[in-house]
Image (cartoon, rainbow, N blue to C red; front, side, top):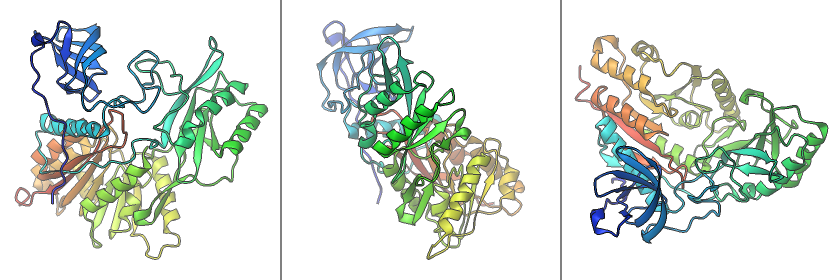
Length: 478
């Protein structure tokens, strides 16, 4: 049974000439949540704050030969998909928080827009049409953001400290009192944190607080440019005890992060479907949305359909978010990442999860490799693997897909090696996924079975997605 989504329909809009002078009819929405309209002469206008089906007046703030950028100043006909934003700091005006772009659009329509972006990228960039559209993975639209980097700034003229995201299209920090996309207990800390930093000796040399929530621990990482005084350390300890947060200090780069007081509880999240617990440091990369991550891992492994006798590679394995669940299903798992530090952390997590299990994890090892400089020879040297899980950063996995394509087109280089029968590709950039999908389908002998969006970041323009590729047996016959 196919899993289908319902992309937001396009609209046939009457020409602007039929509207009152100066009005624009919004035809569609781009991924930056800007309405798209055309003037009577065909010139494109991108309108912040406008939604499809609306008629608006605008103020133009940038003009080019073929397009204009504008902001809606009045909405004369409102879209049925327009909703009241859930955050008092959201808006198109000066000083509004720039953390979210789509709060004025209904949540289901946000997902439909993202699905359309994915499908358009697949076709226009990769010339690929997926056989089945996966039902979007969705979860809570509020209180989901367990990772965040908050800017801190002491403003002399106001005599106060601001903590939050940057203002829309600005380097200034938004004057935020709450943030509904953060967990409520963290949103409630924004005002107390402002008072804490204001009272510190180092209030002018602490530019950032990074948030990392585990299942049971909330960690705050204070970036400080100068050593902290004894009084400031005491203030942090008192705040942590009062509000139940764990302070970490970061004097320089991420590698310098350390607990303010050793011996505290471990920061970790669970993947209960697999009996896996993932300890992590607050500056490690983990998914922002734990609700979606649990579903994402479960669906990815279900679609990969790993059997007990199979060997699997997890490319771009990170801390082992997919690798360790795979080790509960496969005969052997290889996790590959480009960072020595990440691989060391993955190995620690493997040891942590091997203890006290009723059924031991499959033999699992981790390797460091430059994944942006792959070659066919390296793939052959890794030996035959049955399935791949690919989860790259925004740059995608071009070198990996290209090496696979080279082996398909030059079978004499395989030396008994065969490609994986199935690949599940998890992406945070639909453009690079579409590019790599084009390589896999048109040059590496795969079919694109399924693809769909993962709404990891509700109310933002970020598009996370997943695609399934299966080896085309006909095209791979030597």
